[in-house]
Length: 398
Image (cartoon, rainbow, N blue to C red; front, side):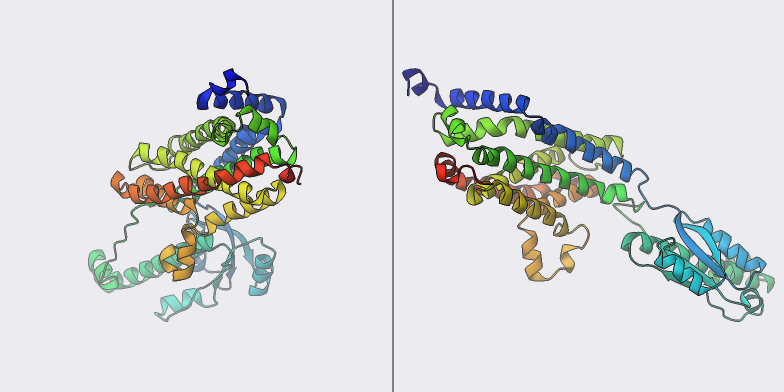
């Protein structure tokens, strides 16, 4: 080692590795594609996907065996709901079942014969609804709207009958509904997919690209047997080698996190009721956590293909165990412990507290603290990474 190199120090070696990495980024198009192009395209895809926010005009079929004024009025009321759109009027249940199996409709409403006659004679009649149930959220909203419409229709009939007996409208309503139920949905009053899924899918894409990109840029050095040149640029020191290599990708991923949050909160209108700083900091901390995990994976496995497979599987599982689709409080104790193996779980808690609930920033400290473990603990494998990067037996593996 020349005297000049011995005096370079940490920052000098880091700068040299950074210059080498910038040359790789400029030389190979796959690097900017993974860093910018594909993540941005994925973010814009979710913008288009969730542009409506909530399911509207879900196709349903109606079997009207009565064909009277009241039955047509009920069909018109169902069709007027935001969720249901009467696409087919079929002659029987079998035809409706066929349409549902084909995926043309998601629900079917059956109005029996003598519907109007039974109502006018004050005899109870039944309206049946057959709901697919394959899409839990959409079908739940569809079932609620159909049930509410039928209940409103029935209440309107009863109020009219009571008014014909001499009661005033207020008296008839009070007799019909002696107990009034007032429901308040606090944090997602519109039941919007934009508020619920976009802030989870977009960070999911960010963490997956973070894992894949980090594993790829380090694993490629091993696969192409260039790890020796990488370490030589760092003077044989692992920390300048690691910092210099990861710095451009970390900065790019942080900018992507800022871009992602700008899309969600400024463009798509996702509420941000709490601390903007905490939300932005959590996004940056999420990037660092998954970069550390990626470094751990490639250091231990020392194989690019296998590391990418493990990283992809680990990243995708984060959404399943985040508690967004199935609440953690309803999980079994063992499964609930498994949820804490993913930094995304704690990021989700920060998002819900700060963006939707508007909780004080102090409530985010514990979750950010747990995320910090994922940032720092995997770095204990850095000596292993140095050994892998300087030992030729780990080079050239596919």
